[in-house]
Length: 83
Image (cartoon, rainbow, N blue to C red; front, side):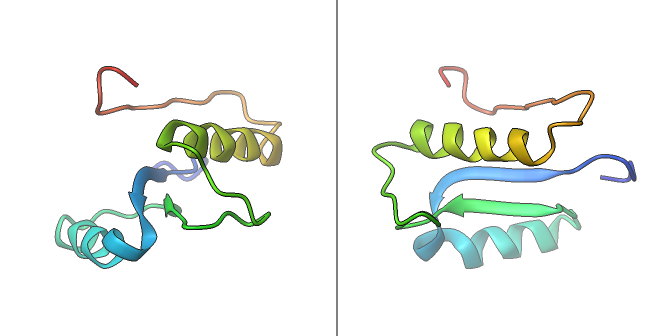
């Protein structure tokens, strides 16, 4: 988070409606700073509905990689073994 040339993203399949406030409080209490905090929306920006959390994350990461196509490196830290 202190690295100026890095984009830090918290990406979760938790719903915006149910978890945005809680996750915001958790981030604040741990004094974390993300450039993007992305929760699974009920409806995506192109009016799409995601069949699963994995589909949501794949769609998000695909868009992110298209946006930052000049990036030299992408690191993903996953907290669930089976993802």
